[in-house]
Image (tube, helix red, strand yellow):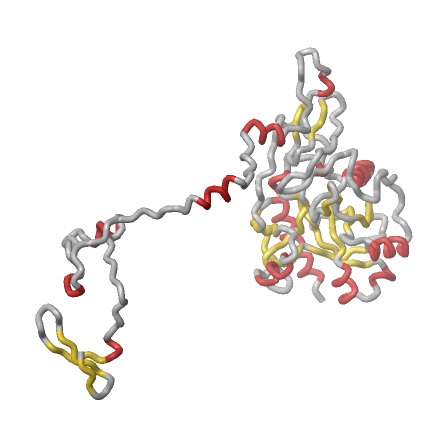
Length: 374
């Protein structure tokens, strides 16, 4: 090659002898050593040779004939001495995994075993009841998806069932609200447009109550959000049901969709609902009135040392059951006669549901809101 003014080269083709001019940007430096290897066999290589095969001598201009033979990669024998010293624990067998899953069920050694110890069913999250007394017993470890609750152990401060009585004084309720983390209540709720009185699980929204009604701690008028049992848990006992906030799609300041939305109670739930125009079903109520108050405030259950965000302890359900003559709907049962094994499947973090009763209630609620507008 010969350098010309303007950073160009005059080059001569080594095969034809023709001379041409190329700019520096069009040239690439040639490595000192060229080792031709045959292309790796595969779909791309086969497709590229459909119409024309690759030449046997691909680089004759560089005086390279053919290809270098394949040389398999070899490992230095000294590396084997390192791997031999590593103690790798073998993966457990299927039998060992089954034994680990079912080690809380005592095996029946003979046909003459005590029938009272034979499990009649295993509940959703690993809690089982005996055929004799149907009492829930404690699972030895939490489930991977959600912890289980038992009737004999709730790991909460309230271990005894609270006897139903008149509502405590307002100042006592307010003090308990401030001390409570989750601020849950069982209240009496009149279904809009009817005289039907039902128990409902609600969560008191203290921040909204103070912002919109600063006298809430003096007159007992608070904003509460309704929680609803997840429809996938309808066959589970009360303490294993998950209660999530009932959300609806906002259709304006005084309207919402009749379908209800369930969002898993996580740290980013509020931001998700705000970005998707989801608002909780809520209302103002005098929490201390005798025709409203049933039980509370209390927190979500703590199971096996894990604080849950959607489970209610057995003692609170038992307190609600003692008040059955004050409401018309039935509380969730503490026992369910299900099959021997029932497993909880991972639930989507967000879902939309339809229920005729809820749709009718929301329609009556919207009508009542419009009727009460000034």
